[in-house]
Length: 493
Ligand code: SF4
Ligand code: SF4
Image 1 (cartoon, helix red, strand yellow):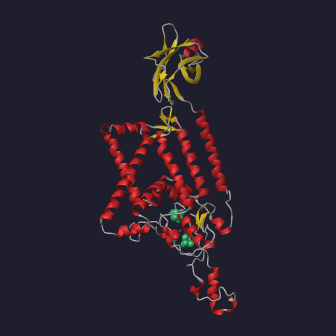
Image 2 (cartoon, rainbow, N blue to C red):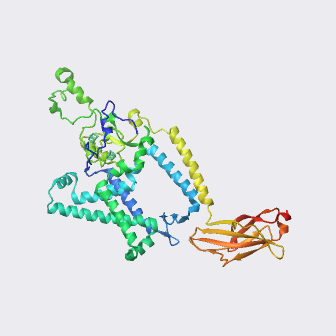
Image 3 (cartoon, protein in one colour):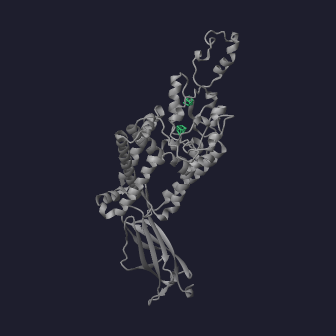
């Protein structure tokens, strides 16, 4: 956590959470509706974000979803590429790269992600909160409504809000399920709900959880639950860009006063020096910072904090306080940006963003991980083949004197098409004799198991263990080389 920005300030605000009372009860925050340039920008960005979120499950590549995270069946699709449990290491490296990216991004840009791209913030502030303002009105009206007895107006508004909130929660739960099992499967379930009662119950449970979060839990998800929020304390430093109050410009804060409020007859007469009785007041007036202590920044804050106290864990960088303060600065004809995106160093010392050793180290690790990830993805094959001699068996001598070994070929087709293949021994002359159906087709997105004997003339064996190589061919084109050991009797060595 960046050091507090206001010197000599009472730090007691760090001992409590604005949303929890001394008795441990919830202080329900009713923020004023934000208005301003950044809020409008966030609204447009959220519309774009939500369009993507609700459109992606409908996009298909080769009749398969573009993205799917089917944890139950252990099947993952990214950009149309299927990843199987065999690709776990690619997944692991991808996750590592993602974590390092998040760390690096946070070190430099603070919690920009929370304010602009976190689904919790987007749904809370840009969907549910907007609906709430639309149904209940701005913060003052909401407080009035809360204090009202249960009359017709209150019941109508509460029921409307309840129905709309639950409906949207249900839609969100359905789309999350579509990301898990694919939209096609979900539509199949919707068309025949009686056959999928279990799924419907799970959906209702998840919808209720979403509803609870957006109806009541709200900012507590960011303050109490989110692990990313907890990490800020170790990730942010004085050079991180955060939503920050320019204490140098703003302090000492004080109410906006007109000249006559001070009994000051010297302000405009240019004879200040002559008026001894008013000198101290004049001094105070000229030393006052730009913050007029209007609390507009606090009233709009969805987590109930006062950003003038410095960077705090509760701040989700929603920028509402920037807009609120800019509007105040406009109205008192002072430059905007008293609260803005800035680093503690840039405010205190005028230092621009420094690429320090920590950023360099994280960047180097990230580059390394991304290179490894790119290599693994490029070198990843569509067909996984593992050839092994059948466990517990050595070799068999045939009546014609040749030697046979029994093999198991395990195959995983990671593509969206069936693969027909043939096998050919490389560098050795011998026969391949299939056991069972000997099907040479691996169905799309499926596993297959093939058993066969390899029969060799013992004169070709180089020891009791000889390495054999086999080529796998699809439409006459070699797609893979597989190797295994061939066991023969000691006497031929
Ligand atoms: S909105 Fe600006 S002027 Fe008003 S209290 Fe906040 S920082 Fe000070
Ligand atoms: S302090 Fe400002 S940016 Fe942070 S959560 Fe409150 S309103 Fe949003």
